[in-house]
Image 1 (cartoon, one colour):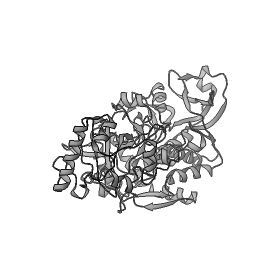
Image 2 (tube, rainbow, N blue to C red):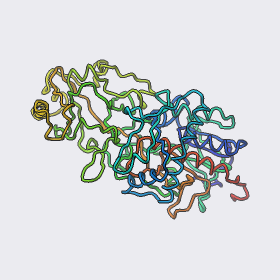
Image 3 (tube, rainbow, N blue to C red):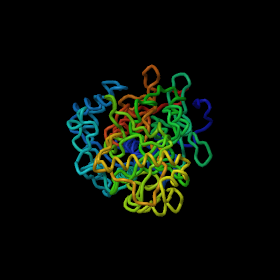
Image 4 (cartoon, one colour):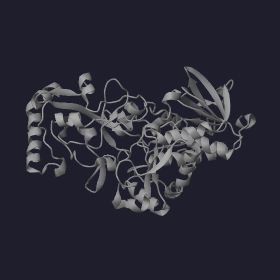
Length: 508
């Protein structure tokens, strides 16, 4: 931390300083402004303006709408059984989540350029009940998304921020430290770095840290989660800055290593030209494809509708992540029918498609030409190009093709409707890498979004919101992260702006 005595002069000052211009940061800024319209609010953002928005900008845009707080409380409690959050916090979390529909509708009406639509966009129904055995149908009234796609939720929140004149922005200005009392830990401001120059910003009432998680930091993925190699689907800016800064500030950490990755470990396609990963498509027109692990064998049911459970399978009474992250390297093998009729990636979400603007070709021919997809006339020749054993790979494909002929997959129970043989040359392969939606680890916080120290006491004038330090501790219901970003951001903005301004004499 930087002590107050180390600050020779303040380069700027504000009432509430918010680090991070994602959905949570926007919600915090709107709430702080509307709670005190005379307050000055400053948002500092690590990325340039055109690349701001965090994971919320490129997510699936699903919003959980609940009308039953008690049912939502029971549902989330059941999903969190391996790492339960405080019960009083969970009850209030559920109450606020169940009351959020009117807030969302108000923001959309105010923005005037987006539209709320019932449904998840993932299914024909109005709701995705990820874990029905825990009470999903009572807890979830419906899922919603916001048009336009992609990015409707982020566009809504950003537009509402821009309509408030006392909210200022500073882009390309990452948070690098907090200004604190070394004894009491009270926060007086922050150090940000703008284009290589460090600037001290006085925060008269409070600081809100909403800078996302650590999914884009490979070392943190390895050390906290044990993933040998994984890549973010969202912003490359989520490199664990908030975790390190809040830990240095004296915060207790939680949810750094849950029983499973709450948002799931998805199949992704990483190419050398981009820092993040493409999400592989969910819905297929043809099914003549399989996946093989390091031993050249299949390892799971490729036909399961795993996108409905964030790539979690039920084993021995527990929902666990699919094996992709621990059996790699993984390759997807497919034939000409799949290549022609299925774009391999999802266009509606993910950083590479939404922000970087890469348009993967519908028939994958461009990517074959780039060498991102390997091509060969036979399965054995394909295996050789991959550095795999041709005989073992050939045997794995032959065994799968025999299952297709029988109409039954004795190995993994792949559904009969998806059993189509790899039979039409040429054949193709693409490496499948672990793709991370987000991480929920960060500083432990209370329902007011106040950051807590190891004794459970709030660190004065320090708040946290969004994915960083999320309450989600294990299983995740579709639509919960964006809505939690809203309630935690609102709580942080309201709590911070109502604090009395600190005075120099008080700080001394």
